[in-house]
Image 1 (cartoon, helix red, strand yellow):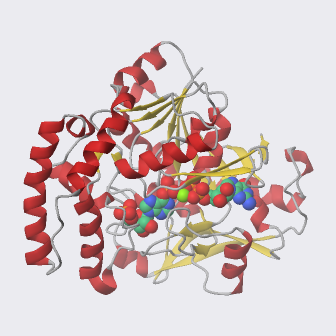
Image 2 (tube, helix red, strand yellow):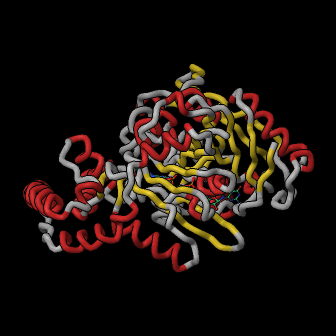
Image 3 (cartoon, protein in one colour):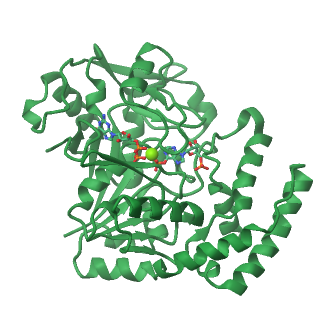
Length: 422
Ligand code: GDP
Ligand code: IMO
Ligand code: MG
């Protein structure tokens, strides 16, 4: 029995949902601790595809307690739609618990997300426009509305009206846009009635579960380089996807975590704007996009694709204290003649191996590649490591060596069973 943190170790979409579903089958509790419906986690099970944005990917297991912790921002409309869509498909949500401290995404957050992106013009971040940033801004400013406020009718009406007045001043006077009417308040009171019975102190539930020796899984969202504190700022999200964020977002102490597992793709992708040293603008990038079906789960935007970057993976290992890595989508690499791994950056003739903080410095960096021969075989039906083509094994083992961390699982397809355990 253990408590495990699973995080994305690149720019998100590493296949966390799929890996979490696999671990969740033997976990008692699955916890989301940060982010909101900017996340899109795909689980393919028994021929069905589920795209989850707020509800933990453990929900497909009826016995698993699924928790949305204090650090998550919740759009009540979206979570209710997700609940309804799961229930319609025969998936029970009776084991879902939402922490009263989680913040609520309000309609003005969504409007402000769009307006601030528009105002940035060419320097926009490329957010998911789900109101995530503005909601976390209110949380930091201490004017946010929490789930415990939402289910307290009089308090909610008072806070919502007060906030709306201020937001409308910003919307009309700063952005020169149309004000928002207060009709959403009634709508939100309806959501509150439906959400009320899911609300529970999840910090207590998580603590007790760990104390009782249960298997607890923390489902990361986004990825290391989207982290507000250590990512490619300002092209980041507004929360903390690294393993340390779990403590803050779930309300547990670091001593309660046994393992930190990083999820990586066998290559690199990114949606939204911002630097990406190994990005491919050629045929190979397009081949990976098409073969890997690299289109955003939340926004449908084409994902930018590039070679695997070990500078990034090592940064993830270091900043999240990763105890192992999962390498997904190795099957997508089949058919490529040569596999390139970025092992450092050439910065005006100087070779650097640590990910720079400054984007101006990063812009000067050209990837330095190590090249390995590729493989042609279809590996989607392989389940034993030994059966992989030698060149695929060489690729995996070289990554392991460069990152100095064990690759414990390899994904060879989107299905629940398409994994190689090592
Ligand atoms: P997440 O945000 O990290 O949960 O990842 P997404 O669900 O947004 O994107 C990952 C995509 O890759 C999904 O469509 C998954 O079904 C798919 N996927 C995950 N692992 C594998 C794998 O090993 N091989 C292939 N071909 N697809 C995978
Ligand atoms: P999962 O959990 C990939 C990106 C957005 C944008 C930046 C800021 O599926 O891996 P935001 O709406 O959060 O303010 O947008 O962060 N982003 C993600 N990219 N996967 C995600 O989640 C993401 N969540 C946010 O594209 O660049
Ligand atoms: Mg995703």
